Image (cartoon, rainbow, N blue to C red):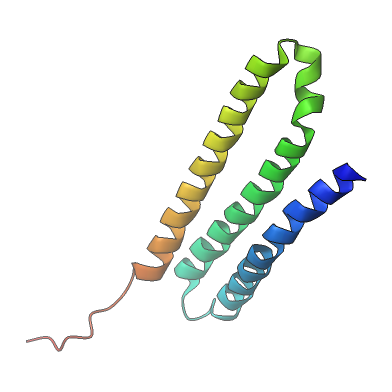
Length: 114
């Protein structure tokens, strides 16, 4: 029962982000004809965010099962957690870079040309 509660509580906190990213993907698909490059960057960034939360949640939940056959659980667990956090941060970093490029690249100036 405790395992189900743990998994459900983690999913409960991620669901609002999943909904937001899904809406972002839908809007990017709808606006594809007007801004294809920005749409593809937005979709890729939202999918990176989603993959990061799903894979990170899976890795956190299953860490004891991955580590127990390796021996020295505490040291291995710390190394595993460091790797998970690093990969999650790197994925989020790339996702944010892509999203910022999608938002601000290819803009035309609204100033009248002299």
